[in-house]
Image (cartoon, rainbow, N blue to C red; front, side, top):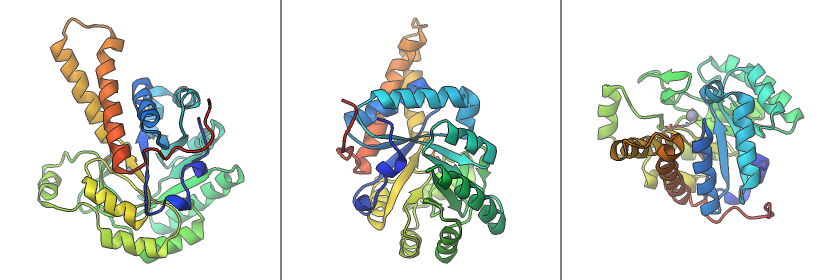
Length: 299
Ligand code: G3H
Ligand code: ZN
C-alpha cells in the first residue's frame, strides 16, 4: 500500500526503531526492496535520486514504484532524495511523492535557507513533507562529491535555528557517516583506522535542540551497533543505497561467471534481486523495523 510518509514516521517510534529509505533506479531493485518489506512486515521509504530519474525517466520510475507498492501488502512511502532543482521537485510532487529533499547543503547558509523556505512553502500547501540538509556529508552521492576536508558536521544550535526558520519536516544531519564506498585511498586509510563512524555526542546534542525526525544519510557501511545507538538517540530514518547495489552486483557477477550460457536478463537478474532483497531484510532487522507495518493494508 502506498501511503503518505506521515503514516510511517511518527513520534511513537522515536528511540525504539527506524525506517530505511532505500534508493532504487529500476524494476529489479524496486522488486527486491518491496519483497523485503513484505517479508519483514516493515514500513519502508522508497526513494529516487536525480541520477535514477535521469536513468529511468521520472514518470516511468515513479509509476513503477507506485504500482509495485500499491499491489504489495505493507506500508510504502515515495520520497525524492538529494535534489537542488525546484522545478523537478514540483514535477515530482505532481507525480505523487509525499516527501522531497531539497539539498542545498553545498550553498552558504543564507542561500540554503532561502530556497529551502520556498520549497517548504510550496510543498506544505500540497500536504508534502520536506527534508533538508545542514552540514556536508563526505563522499560520492549522485551529483555530489564531497572530498575530505570539504565535509562539515552539523552544528546543533545552527540546526535548531535552521529548522525553526524553514519549518522543514525532517532534517538530514552530517554526523560522520559518508556517502558510498570510499574510493579515495586517503579516506579508505582513515576509515580503516576509525572504530566509530558516527559522532554520537554530536547527534545527541542535535537531538536535544531539534525535535523533528532526524535522518542519517550514507548508512551503508555504518556498523550495526552504531546504527542501533543512533536509533536510541532518536534517528528515525536511515538512507541506504550502496550496500543494496553491492549485494546486487556481487550476485549478478557470480551468476554470470557460474552460468555463462545464460543470456536472458530475467534469469541473470533473479539471484541478484534475491541478494538485494536479503540485504534489505538484514538492514530492516538492524533498524528493528520488522513487524512494524501495522494498520489497514490492501487485502
Ligand atoms: O541518500 C542516499 C544515501 O545517503 C545513501 O548513502 O550509498 O552510503 O548508503 P549510501
Ligand atoms: Zn544521501
